[in-house]
Image (cartoon, rainbow, N blue to C red):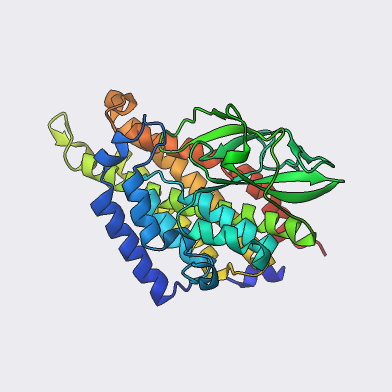
Length: 375
């Protein structure tokens, strides 16, 4: 039996549990669904005062050491925050900024201290990784030229429209490097907006051609940091999806308790009861995997146990969010297909989550080689 199957620990610390409660209260008070809906068709997709409030609470640097202005709570402490944000469908640049900080810190350490301080202070960061829409590809098509400039385009760069700092994964002599590019170094028309299915999220294509990086991080640590950041991206996205599935479930149960058909509450019909229970079980299953991931990930290079945990969290969260969003639309009938019904927000979030940091099929393929005994 493979030893990676032996670690099934779930142990959120007291600080992390308190953080989950605080984050849920923040979302409930600051971002009810009406506030979220008001931002769906805006340029940035989020409310600037809400983002600043999150920065003031230390969330932008929650997983970074206090020597850089972070909270020093460890990378696992970001998980409950993302679960809470998912439960409100709240769109902010926190995910992209957190991952940018993780990538810079894990690859550059003290040499990137100034950038980490800026991110902890509220500057928006974004990792420019994809040259195409495939999370399994090499994704280093952008070149760092001998004259020190970049050439090439990155696609689907999260929060590109508001990012202050881009970390572009580039190729130099066949090896990956991280080129840190400030927004002012890009051309006036370098960023073109993508239209995503989830309108609480934003992304864009960024043409780095001619841009001169402010710093380039090289060395063996880059590939390890990239691998770990992708796994953390899957875990954080899974946490958001688990939170969104919980909100979707609450929306469904409230509807089942108030909507009548043929003189009876529709919640009394077994054809609706059973799928609702399936959503609950799936949501709790996903939450368990997410909390396991939060328990085993660390600030050093992620272990095989941590890799398994991140991938399993993403699989379970993707599956339940897709199912919950689909059932929500079906249960609401014709109204479920309309813009006014929140079901459309859930099913859109499910579709977005599937495309981020690899879907369930992507991770199942990789889990097979990790979990199956090769002896």
